[in-house]
Length: 108
Image (cartoon, rainbow, N blue to C red; front, side, top):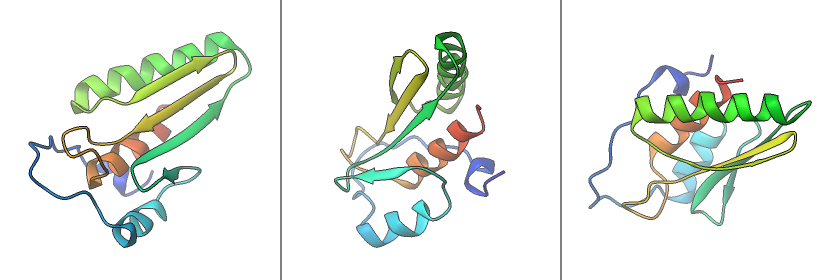
């Protein structure tokens, strides 16, 4: 289990700056397969044997998102699910986004 996965997402009330590229790179090293897109959001595509397995994963991620109060964009297709996450209130990345990414990996 990732150290990040043991933490809880903290709701952002806005008014804080997004993480800079150095902080993003440091946190990204703690994740596997995730990418920072345009310095704005995290994304990862998961591959499954069929639609049912991909859907089950999406449902687990959705349940975890509700518990964390942090909601990703999830794209579901046959055998694949792509997850994108960022903090909407600041239109960028916070540590909670990296925590959420680690927790998403735990949903496999």
